[in-house]
Length: 220
Picture 1 (tube, rainbow, N blue to C red):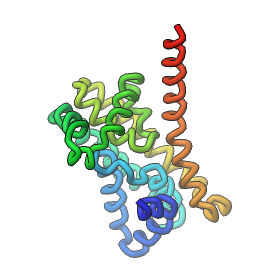
Picture 2: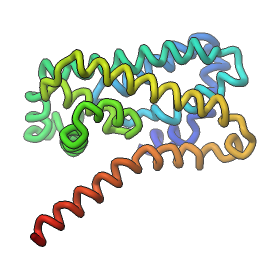
Picture 3: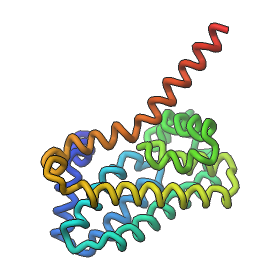
């Protein structure tokens, strides 16, 4: 957990080191990280938002090309969600049941994360696939839940593409424009934490609204 927190706070340093060491292979490494975070429910903690922001900032100062990066990471995000949806469609109900009843499965697929994603999906419907892109952990589980809930693939594909384009475009673009501003560059750890806090804010607001509604129902 300490290594994960260090990665989150210093993802800029790690990514600069990868670019310096591997050059254009950095495209493939970024592709793999985004694909795994969105496509595999056992890896929900990878730093997707801050990684995209940092990748945009690095594209502004290195030979890595922003448009190439956007296309590749868009494909990674769309493909990851599609694989996650297919997994949920094929065995989602069984895995959700096992994670809730078998401790061994619960280590890999956290029942609390699945429950949170189910609530998010049920409340927002198809839009959850788009909105979840901006919520860490939830974005990894919502496509899985959508597949398990038998959401029609045609509808899922539209939301998947829309969400991926907005998420990758905004995060990369923000990093490209602001990532090398001195005050941002010198305080990147705080910026990384800020990105995470902004990302989870919608989920926190929704949780508070849900509790308020339940409290109001009890009073009635």
